[in-house]
Length: 337
Image 1 (cartoon, one colour):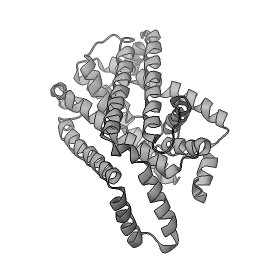
Image 2 (tube, one colour):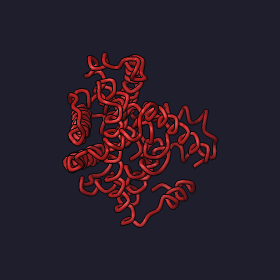
Image 3 (spheres, rainbow, N blue to C red):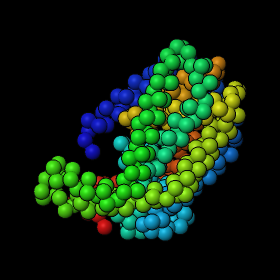
Image 4 (spheres, one colour):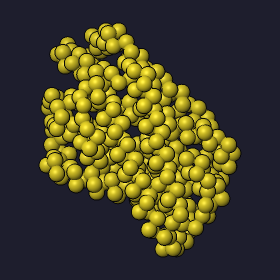
């Protein structure tokens, strides 16, 4: 991975950290952290892992046309992927879990990556759904929040992008023959001749990963599961809130969940440093939460979302006896079963 990607990510994270902490008194933030009742993190973490299990089930469901793989087999791979997203740049965990799936279950990487992209598109739709569902709450986002009322416009633009992506994937899945011909047509004009066969093979595998989208029932199940996953994650926000001395509505936390997760799509340092924290603090402040308490809560929430899944994913990765360097080497060599 090119070094400049890292520098860009760290620079963006530094900017967001500055935005998150500017104007705050560190001693007040420390006092909020010391006064928190941390046992509330236990039900929060438990709820989060139920959501991770639901993610494993969703991926199992998307992969069914390719291969029937039990959810219990998918769970460690999903954990490895989320660990990779947390500690490696450029969301490398997505490639990492596709690699582990190929290694263990012989599912082609390009096919599994297609299902992962579908996951991310549905996640984006649900996040934007959270934002639109809580549009009345957006009236609280005044200029002091740092958003200056632009969230409505960004939400509309984002909705258009994600809905367009859904339509494109549905069309690719429903019309595989025409999609294949179209991709080959583009490949003949854009891909060098020596890579044509490899390109066509990757396209075929990628399209096979979209087969689950050919059934309206399957699309509905993936959509419902995505809603459940993100509601469970919002429940973790709710549990962690009780560790601190403030209260906002569950809908406000849905709004926070939607916006901070959309913000983490911005390139940043590994672990979404800053891009998670700045919008989270700003939203809570917009709802009247004291800045120091909002900062303490957001930092603890971020850590509670990051640390447990990272440790579990690292354990599963060590159990697989693989390293990120090995994954990079094999991907560079272009090997794909």
